[in-house]
Image (tube, rainbow, N blue to C red; front, top):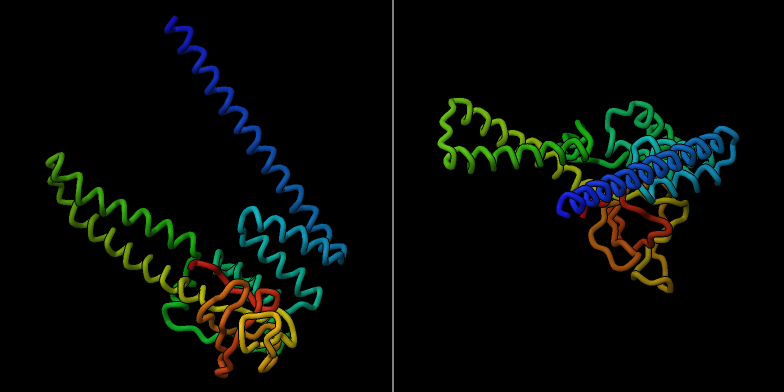
Length: 252
C-alpha cells in the first residue's frame, strides 16, 4: 500500500512538472511569435501595431531588447520624447548597448533637448545593468553571511576565510553603490509629448503654469496619484500627469 501511494505521488509530481514545462514552453513560443510579429510591423512601417506589440510584451516581462525596439518604433513615428524614455530604460538593463546609446543621442538631437545632468554615482551605476548589480549584491550578502555564521559552527579555520569575507564586503560596497545610483536615477523622468502642461496642482482641472517640450528630463520630487511633482534643469516646478511624463525606471 505504501509503495503504491509512493508510486502515485511520484507519477503525480512528474505529471505536474511536465505540464508546467509544457506551459512554460508554450508561453515562450507565444512571446517569441509576438516579438517577431512586432518586428515585422516595424519593418513594414506600421508603427502603431509595432508599439502596441512591444508594449504588451513589456507588460509581461521587461527586456532591454524590447525597450530598444520600442524606442525605435517611437523614433520612426516621430514621438521623440517616448523614444528617449525607452532608450533610457534599455540602458538601465543593458548599459553596453551601443546602438541604444547612439539612438538615444539621435532622439535627443531630434527633440532638441540636452541629456540629464547626472552625478558620479549615477554614471558609475551605468557601468553595469541593474540586474547585474542586484545579483552581485545578493551573492555578496549571502557569501558574507555564510562566512560569518558557518565557520564557527563547523570549526572551519581555513586561511582563505578572511580573504573571501573581504571580497564579499567589497562586493557589497561596489554593488550597493551601483544600486544607489540607479535608485537616484529612478527619480528622473522624461516629458513624453510637446506642450506638456506643468500644472499648479495634481488635478485635471488645475491651470498650467507653463508647458514643457517632449524629451525634456526632470527630477521627480514626490507623487500624488497619477501625478508627479517635478523640477526641471532650469528650475521650473510643477505637477505633471502620467499621460505626459514618465519615470525612466521605477526602483522606489
